[in-house]
Image (cartoon, rainbow, N blue to C red; front, side):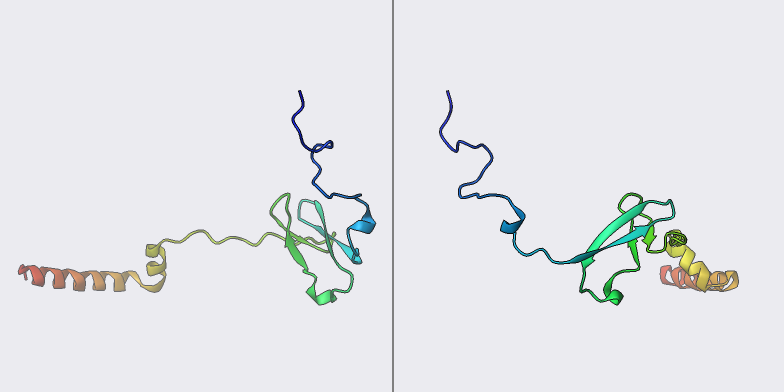
Length: 118
């Protein structure tokens, strides 16, 4: 027993033919190829009237996440990532060991004098 509804399943009411002429004007476009360090090619499409300086030189490759450039023979290399630094690492960059000892002694003296241990 069939339930009521459209005779063509999955079509919406008022749907007409699906030809290119019914989809509107197709803008001219250019295909730009990008390559990553592993040799993978990614093609991106841009409007044909887009100025050259607005087309990116480097993109992120969707397959590897590596940077991909427009020169197949010389793809961009991965920039070396700096490891995460702790707060202590930054402090050690700004202070010499002698300064650290001096600051620690000063802080201990303040703490002891506030507790009455002089």
